[in-house]
Length: 404
Image (cartoon, rainbow, N blue to C red; front, side, top):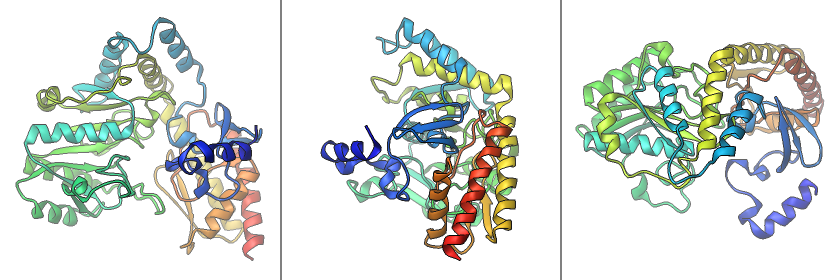
Protein backbone atom coordinates (compact mmCIF):
# COMPACT_ATOMS: atom_id res chain seq x y z
CA UNK A 1 0.00 0.00 0.00
CA UNK A 2 1.51 3.33 -1.09
CA UNK A 3 1.37 6.68 0.65
CA UNK A 4 -0.94 7.98 -2.08
CA UNK A 5 -3.30 5.01 -1.65
CA UNK A 6 -3.46 5.53 2.11
CA UNK A 7 -4.14 9.24 1.70
CA UNK A 8 -7.08 8.50 -0.61
CA UNK A 9 -8.51 5.96 1.82
CA UNK A 10 -7.98 8.28 4.79
CA UNK A 11 -9.91 11.08 3.08
CA UNK A 12 -13.03 8.91 3.27
CA UNK A 13 -12.79 8.05 6.98
CA UNK A 14 -10.67 10.79 8.64
CA UNK A 15 -11.65 14.50 8.57
CA UNK A 16 -9.43 16.07 5.94
CA UNK A 17 -7.46 12.85 5.66
CA UNK A 18 -5.27 13.92 8.59
CA UNK A 19 -5.27 16.60 11.27
CA UNK A 20 -2.99 18.46 13.61
CA UNK A 21 0.75 19.01 13.32
CA UNK A 22 1.34 15.67 11.57
CA UNK A 23 -0.79 16.67 8.59
CA UNK A 24 1.64 16.39 5.67
CA UNK A 25 -0.75 18.25 3.37
CA UNK A 26 0.56 21.53 4.80
CA UNK A 27 4.20 20.67 4.03
CA UNK A 28 6.01 20.69 0.70
CA UNK A 29 4.56 18.20 -1.83
CA UNK A 30 7.28 15.59 -1.31
CA UNK A 31 6.62 15.01 2.39
CA UNK A 32 5.32 11.51 3.15
CA UNK A 33 2.26 11.13 5.37
CA UNK A 34 2.57 7.49 6.40
CA UNK A 35 5.61 5.69 7.81
CA UNK A 36 6.41 2.00 8.09
CA UNK A 37 9.19 1.76 10.67
CA UNK A 38 12.08 3.37 12.50
CA UNK A 39 15.50 2.19 13.66
CA UNK A 40 18.11 4.29 15.42
CA UNK A 41 18.17 7.71 13.76
CA UNK A 42 16.41 6.50 10.61
CA UNK A 43 12.82 6.17 9.44
CA UNK A 44 11.29 4.49 6.40
CA UNK A 45 8.04 5.65 4.84
CA UNK A 46 5.45 3.24 3.44
CA UNK A 47 6.91 3.71 -0.05
CA UNK A 48 10.21 2.31 1.19
CA UNK A 49 12.20 5.54 1.20
CA UNK A 50 14.83 5.82 3.93
CA UNK A 51 15.56 9.06 5.81
CA UNK A 52 18.07 10.19 8.39
CA UNK A 53 15.60 11.58 10.88
CA UNK A 54 16.09 15.06 12.34
CA UNK A 55 12.51 15.42 13.58
CA UNK A 56 12.64 12.39 15.90
CA UNK A 57 8.87 11.97 15.64
CA UNK A 58 8.50 15.66 16.59
CA UNK A 59 10.61 15.21 19.71
CA UNK A 60 9.71 11.97 21.51
CA UNK A 61 12.58 9.90 20.12
CA UNK A 62 15.61 10.95 22.17
CA UNK A 63 17.68 7.74 22.25
CA UNK A 64 16.85 6.53 18.75
CA UNK A 65 13.98 4.45 17.43
CA UNK A 66 13.56 1.05 19.11
CA UNK A 67 16.34 1.56 21.64
CA UNK A 68 17.15 -1.88 23.10
CA UNK A 69 17.18 -0.89 26.78
CA UNK A 70 13.87 0.93 26.51
CA UNK A 71 12.22 -1.79 24.43
CA UNK A 72 13.37 -4.46 26.87
CA UNK A 73 11.95 -2.55 29.85
CA UNK A 74 8.64 -1.97 28.04
CA UNK A 75 8.36 -5.62 26.98
CA UNK A 76 9.15 -6.85 30.47
CA UNK A 77 6.39 -4.69 31.91
CA UNK A 78 3.92 -5.62 29.16
CA UNK A 79 4.42 -9.29 29.98
CA UNK A 80 3.12 -8.52 33.49
CA UNK A 81 0.39 -6.08 32.51
CA UNK A 82 -0.11 -2.54 31.29
CA UNK A 83 -3.54 -1.00 31.92
CA UNK A 84 -4.61 -2.54 35.23
CA UNK A 85 -7.03 -1.56 38.03
CA UNK A 86 -4.30 0.60 39.45
CA UNK A 87 -0.73 1.59 38.61
CA UNK A 88 2.14 -0.84 38.88
CA UNK A 89 5.10 -0.42 41.25
CA UNK A 90 6.94 1.27 38.40
CA UNK A 91 4.87 4.42 38.97
CA UNK A 92 6.49 4.91 42.37
CA UNK A 93 9.91 4.06 40.95
CA UNK A 94 9.52 6.59 38.15
CA UNK A 95 8.35 9.30 40.53
CA UNK A 96 11.34 8.59 42.77
CA UNK A 97 13.67 8.82 39.78
CA UNK A 98 12.26 12.21 38.78
CA UNK A 99 12.54 13.53 42.32
CA UNK A 100 16.15 12.30 42.50
CA UNK A 101 17.01 13.79 39.08
CA UNK A 102 15.21 17.16 39.10
CA UNK A 103 16.21 19.51 41.95
CA UNK A 104 12.90 21.41 41.82
CA UNK A 105 10.84 18.20 42.07
CA UNK A 106 9.54 16.94 45.40
CA UNK A 107 6.68 15.00 43.80
CA UNK A 108 5.38 13.89 40.40
CA UNK A 109 2.00 13.31 38.79
CA UNK A 110 1.59 11.48 35.47
CA UNK A 111 -0.63 11.76 32.40
CA UNK A 112 -0.22 11.17 28.65
CA UNK A 113 0.35 14.34 26.59
CA UNK A 114 2.18 17.61 26.97
CA UNK A 115 -1.16 19.40 26.93
CA UNK A 116 -2.27 17.28 29.89
CA UNK A 117 0.80 18.35 31.82
CA UNK A 118 0.62 22.10 31.13
CA UNK A 119 -3.10 22.15 31.91
CA UNK A 120 -2.58 20.15 35.10
CA UNK A 121 0.22 22.49 36.20
CA UNK A 122 -2.05 25.52 35.85
CA UNK A 123 -4.77 23.71 37.81
CA UNK A 124 -2.31 23.17 40.66
CA UNK A 125 -1.29 26.85 40.54
CA UNK A 126 -4.91 28.00 40.68
CA UNK A 127 -5.74 25.55 43.47
CA UNK A 128 -2.78 26.87 45.45
CA UNK A 129 -3.43 30.58 44.96
CA UNK A 130 -7.20 30.82 44.56
CA UNK A 131 -6.51 33.12 41.62
CA UNK A 132 -7.41 32.90 37.93
CA UNK A 133 -5.00 34.78 35.65
CA UNK A 134 -2.02 33.25 33.86
CA UNK A 135 0.80 35.26 32.29
CA UNK A 136 1.90 33.65 29.01
CA UNK A 137 4.33 34.75 26.28
CA UNK A 138 2.72 35.93 23.06
CA UNK A 139 2.82 33.23 20.39
CA UNK A 140 3.99 30.50 22.77
CA UNK A 141 2.74 26.96 22.25
CA UNK A 142 1.61 25.17 25.40
CA UNK A 143 -0.61 22.50 23.86
CA UNK A 144 -3.87 21.88 22.01
CA UNK A 145 -6.63 22.30 24.61
CA UNK A 146 -9.07 25.19 24.09
CA UNK A 147 -7.15 27.49 26.46
CA UNK A 148 -3.93 27.22 24.43
CA UNK A 149 -4.52 25.75 20.96
CA UNK A 150 -3.09 27.92 18.14
CA UNK A 151 -6.42 27.65 16.29
CA UNK A 152 -9.56 29.19 17.76
CA UNK A 153 -11.86 26.86 15.78
CA UNK A 154 -14.26 25.17 18.16
CA UNK A 155 -13.29 27.34 21.13
CA UNK A 156 -14.96 30.24 22.89
CA UNK A 157 -13.42 33.57 23.97
CA UNK A 158 -14.12 32.69 27.60
CA UNK A 159 -11.67 29.80 27.40
CA UNK A 160 -8.82 32.29 26.86
CA UNK A 161 -10.15 35.09 29.01
CA UNK A 162 -7.74 34.37 31.87
CA UNK A 163 -4.58 34.57 29.74
CA UNK A 164 -2.52 37.76 29.80
CA UNK A 165 0.26 37.94 27.22
CA UNK A 166 3.76 39.38 27.42
CA UNK A 167 6.77 39.48 25.08
CA UNK A 168 9.28 36.68 25.64
CA UNK A 169 12.62 37.82 27.11
CA UNK A 170 11.20 41.24 28.06
CA UNK A 171 11.01 41.76 31.82
CA UNK A 172 9.40 45.14 31.19
CA UNK A 173 6.60 43.48 29.20
CA UNK A 174 6.19 40.75 31.83
CA UNK A 175 5.94 43.32 34.63
CA UNK A 176 3.41 45.35 32.62
CA UNK A 177 1.29 42.26 32.00
CA UNK A 178 1.29 41.46 35.70
CA UNK A 179 0.28 45.02 36.57
CA UNK A 180 -2.90 44.76 34.46
CA UNK A 181 -4.21 41.94 36.68
CA UNK A 182 -2.53 42.82 39.94
CA UNK A 183 -3.61 40.58 42.80
CA UNK A 184 -5.06 37.86 40.54
CA UNK A 185 -2.00 36.17 39.01
CA UNK A 186 -2.00 32.42 39.64
CA UNK A 187 0.97 31.54 37.43
CA UNK A 188 3.60 32.63 34.98
CA UNK A 189 4.02 29.91 32.34
CA UNK A 190 7.04 30.06 30.08
CA UNK A 191 9.03 27.80 27.77
CA UNK A 192 12.77 27.38 28.49
CA UNK A 193 13.56 29.20 25.26
CA UNK A 194 11.40 30.79 22.56
CA UNK A 195 10.58 28.02 20.09
CA UNK A 196 7.55 29.41 18.25
CA UNK A 197 6.94 27.92 14.80
CA UNK A 198 7.73 30.04 11.72
CA UNK A 199 10.20 32.19 13.70
CA UNK A 200 13.88 31.99 14.52
CA UNK A 201 14.33 30.45 17.94
CA UNK A 202 15.54 32.67 20.77
CA UNK A 203 17.51 31.48 23.77
CA UNK A 204 16.37 32.84 27.10
CA UNK A 205 18.22 35.78 28.59
CA UNK A 206 19.41 34.69 32.05
CA UNK A 207 18.26 38.04 33.46
CA UNK A 208 14.76 37.33 32.13
CA UNK A 209 14.71 33.86 33.67
CA UNK A 210 15.83 35.20 37.05
CA UNK A 211 13.46 38.13 36.78
CA UNK A 212 10.50 35.83 36.08
CA UNK A 213 11.42 33.83 39.19
CA UNK A 214 11.64 37.00 41.28
CA UNK A 215 8.33 38.34 39.96
CA UNK A 216 6.52 35.09 40.71
CA UNK A 217 7.87 35.22 44.26
CA UNK A 218 6.80 38.84 44.67
CA UNK A 219 3.30 38.10 43.36
CA UNK A 220 2.92 34.89 45.33
CA UNK A 221 2.31 33.11 42.00
CA UNK A 222 3.67 29.84 40.64
CA UNK A 223 6.47 29.86 38.07
CA UNK A 224 5.65 27.08 35.59
CA UNK A 225 8.28 25.87 33.13
CA UNK A 226 6.81 24.17 30.07
CA UNK A 227 9.66 21.73 29.46
CA UNK A 228 7.51 19.51 27.23
CA UNK A 229 9.56 20.19 24.11
CA UNK A 230 13.00 20.90 25.57
CA UNK A 231 13.00 18.58 28.58
CA UNK A 232 15.76 15.92 28.65
CA UNK A 233 17.57 17.53 25.67
CA UNK A 234 19.15 20.53 27.42
CA UNK A 235 19.67 19.45 31.04
CA UNK A 236 18.28 16.37 32.79
CA UNK A 237 17.78 18.50 35.90
CA UNK A 238 15.49 20.95 34.07
CA UNK A 239 16.25 23.45 31.34
CA UNK A 240 16.65 26.51 33.60
CA UNK A 241 18.78 24.78 36.22
CA UNK A 242 21.88 26.05 34.38
CA UNK A 243 20.77 29.61 35.22
CA UNK A 244 20.14 28.83 38.87
CA UNK A 245 16.39 29.22 38.33
CA UNK A 246 14.09 26.57 39.76
CA UNK A 247 10.38 26.57 38.92
CA UNK A 248 7.53 25.75 41.25
CA UNK A 249 6.03 23.43 38.64
CA UNK A 250 7.42 21.79 35.51
CA UNK A 251 5.52 20.11 32.66
CA UNK A 252 7.30 17.23 30.92
CA UNK A 253 6.49 14.90 28.00
CA UNK A 254 7.93 14.30 24.48
CA UNK A 255 11.42 12.84 25.13
CA UNK A 256 10.47 11.39 28.50
CA UNK A 257 9.92 7.78 27.33
CA UNK A 258 11.57 7.58 23.88
CA UNK A 259 8.29 7.42 22.00
CA UNK A 260 5.98 5.83 24.58
CA UNK A 261 3.05 8.06 25.56
CA UNK A 262 3.57 9.73 28.92
CA UNK A 263 3.69 13.18 30.49
CA UNK A 264 4.38 14.45 33.97
CA UNK A 265 4.09 17.43 36.26
CA UNK A 266 6.71 17.85 38.94
CA UNK A 267 6.42 20.35 41.76
CA UNK A 268 7.73 21.64 45.06
CA UNK A 269 6.64 20.61 48.53
CA UNK A 270 4.75 23.87 48.94
CA UNK A 271 2.36 22.76 46.17
CA UNK A 272 1.95 19.15 47.25
CA UNK A 273 -1.25 19.88 49.20
CA UNK A 274 -2.96 21.83 46.39
CA UNK A 275 -1.99 19.09 43.92
CA UNK A 276 -3.76 16.56 46.14
CA UNK A 277 -7.03 18.48 45.82
CA UNK A 278 -7.27 18.12 42.02
CA UNK A 279 -9.57 15.72 40.26
CA UNK A 280 -7.38 15.22 37.21
CA UNK A 281 -7.27 11.74 35.73
CA UNK A 282 -7.57 9.47 32.70
CA UNK A 283 -8.17 5.77 32.20
CA UNK A 284 -4.84 5.36 30.40
CA UNK A 285 -2.77 7.78 32.48
CA UNK A 286 -1.50 5.07 34.82
CA UNK A 287 -0.58 2.40 32.25
CA UNK A 288 2.66 0.80 33.32
CA UNK A 289 4.42 0.14 30.02
CA UNK A 290 5.06 3.82 29.25
CA UNK A 291 6.26 4.35 32.83
CA UNK A 292 8.75 1.51 32.50
CA UNK A 293 9.93 3.00 29.20
CA UNK A 294 10.28 6.44 30.82
CA UNK A 295 12.33 5.05 33.67
CA UNK A 296 14.65 3.26 31.24
CA UNK A 297 14.94 6.35 29.01
CA UNK A 298 15.91 8.73 31.81
CA UNK A 299 18.34 6.23 33.31
CA UNK A 300 19.95 5.64 29.91
CA UNK A 301 20.32 9.37 29.24
CA UNK A 302 21.92 9.69 32.69
CA UNK A 303 24.20 6.66 32.42
CA UNK A 304 25.44 7.38 28.89
CA UNK A 305 25.53 11.20 29.09
CA UNK A 306 23.11 11.23 26.19
CA UNK A 307 22.74 15.01 26.15
CA UNK A 308 26.48 15.43 25.53
CA UNK A 309 26.18 12.96 22.63
CA UNK A 310 23.36 15.04 21.14
CA UNK A 311 25.34 18.23 21.64
CA UNK A 312 28.30 16.84 19.68
CA UNK A 313 26.08 15.67 16.83
CA UNK A 314 24.13 18.92 16.83
CA UNK A 315 27.31 20.99 16.69
CA UNK A 316 28.61 18.90 13.79
CA UNK A 317 25.35 19.41 11.94
CA UNK A 318 25.27 23.15 12.61
CA UNK A 319 28.87 23.70 11.54
CA UNK A 320 28.37 21.62 8.39
CA UNK A 321 25.20 23.44 7.36
CA UNK A 322 26.82 26.82 7.93
CA UNK A 323 29.77 25.94 5.69
CA UNK A 324 27.51 24.53 2.98
CA UNK A 325 25.14 27.49 2.98
CA UNK A 326 28.08 29.91 2.69
CA UNK A 327 29.64 27.88 -0.12
CA UNK A 328 26.40 27.96 -2.10
CA UNK A 329 25.81 31.67 -1.53
CA UNK A 330 23.06 31.53 1.07
CA UNK A 331 22.80 33.50 4.29
CA UNK A 332 21.13 31.34 6.91
CA UNK A 333 20.19 31.69 10.56
CA UNK A 334 20.70 28.68 12.82
CA UNK A 335 18.96 29.20 16.12
CA UNK A 336 18.08 27.41 19.33
CA UNK A 337 20.17 24.90 21.28
CA UNK A 338 22.23 22.58 19.07
CA UNK A 339 20.15 19.68 20.43
CA UNK A 340 16.94 21.36 19.22
CA UNK A 341 18.13 23.14 16.08
CA UNK A 342 16.49 25.04 13.25
CA UNK A 343 17.69 26.70 10.06
CA UNK A 344 16.02 29.59 8.26
CA UNK A 345 17.05 31.47 5.14
CA UNK A 346 17.67 35.19 5.43
CA UNK A 347 15.00 37.22 3.62
CA UNK A 348 12.77 34.17 3.08
CA UNK A 349 9.55 35.75 4.36
CA UNK A 350 7.25 33.45 2.38
CA UNK A 351 9.35 30.36 3.18
CA UNK A 352 9.66 29.53 -0.51
CA UNK A 353 13.39 28.86 -0.19
CA UNK A 354 12.99 26.80 2.99
CA UNK A 355 10.19 24.77 1.45
CA UNK A 356 12.20 24.00 -1.68
CA UNK A 357 15.37 23.19 0.25
CA UNK A 358 13.65 20.90 2.78
CA UNK A 359 11.88 19.10 -0.06
CA UNK A 360 15.24 18.64 -1.80
CA UNK A 361 16.68 17.30 1.47
CA UNK A 362 13.91 14.69 1.49
CA UNK A 363 14.84 13.57 -2.00
CA UNK A 364 18.37 13.01 -0.72
CA UNK A 365 17.30 11.06 2.35
CA UNK A 366 17.28 13.75 5.04
CA UNK A 367 14.07 14.42 6.98
CA UNK A 368 13.80 17.84 8.56
CA UNK A 369 11.24 20.65 8.56
CA UNK A 370 10.91 24.08 6.92
CA UNK A 371 9.21 25.99 9.76
CA UNK A 372 9.31 23.91 12.95
CA UNK A 373 12.41 23.26 15.04
CA UNK A 374 14.21 19.94 14.58
CA UNK A 375 15.40 17.46 17.20
CA UNK A 376 18.64 15.57 17.69
CA UNK A 377 18.83 12.11 19.28
CA UNK A 378 21.59 10.21 21.02
CA UNK A 379 21.48 7.77 18.07
CA UNK A 380 22.91 10.37 15.67
CA UNK A 381 26.53 9.32 15.19
CA UNK A 382 29.30 11.29 13.53
CA UNK A 383 28.90 9.03 10.48
CA UNK A 384 25.13 9.60 10.36
CA UNK A 385 25.52 13.37 10.46
CA UNK A 386 28.24 13.24 7.81
CA UNK A 387 25.94 11.20 5.56
CA UNK A 388 23.11 13.65 6.17
CA UNK A 389 25.37 16.56 5.28
CA UNK A 390 26.04 14.97 1.91
CA UNK A 391 22.29 15.16 1.28
CA UNK A 392 21.90 18.73 2.54
CA UNK A 393 24.82 19.85 0.38
CA UNK A 394 23.10 18.47 -2.71
CA UNK A 395 19.89 20.18 -1.57
CA UNK A 396 21.67 23.53 -1.25
CA UNK A 397 23.08 23.10 -4.76
CA UNK A 398 19.67 22.28 -6.24
CA UNK A 399 18.08 25.20 -4.37
CA UNK A 400 20.70 27.60 -5.75
CA UNK A 401 20.07 26.30 -9.28
CA UNK A 402 16.30 26.64 -8.85
CA UNK A 403 16.34 30.21 -7.54
CA UNK A 404 19.33 31.40 -9.53
